[in-house]
Amino acid sequence: MALWQFEFSLIPKNANVESWRERSTPKKAIQYLDTILKKSILDGVVKYGESDSTCIELFYEDNKLDEILCRLDLRNLTQLLLEKIVDFCKLADGVILYNGKSYPVDLDSLRNLMLQSKAAKFCQDPAKYLSML
Image (cartoon, rainbow, N blue to C red; front, top):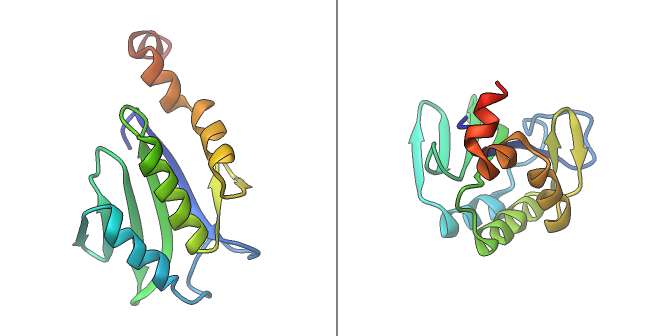
């Protein structure tokens, strides 16, 4: 993960687990990803977007979806792309898992989490952020 990326997991709503293995794959949500980010596949990981930018990774185990990891590039994230990512999360019927806590999927919640993140602090003043490390 790059310093400018805000990272969270998307986990199933109303579940006591973080894995998607016990849920049916959110096919409509995944099809929607095909319309917003470029897809690549490597070693059981389906990645939408670029590793050093905004990307959503789907991790599979035994051909079953196990984990969804989202990384948002706060250097150049547009309102439109953020709205589409929220739409994807809603289509998947998931919730945001960030720093061990779950949050509802909506634009305001995600925006507030991003603004309070280390990635946002880095993007606001990279030199100051790096000097505090």
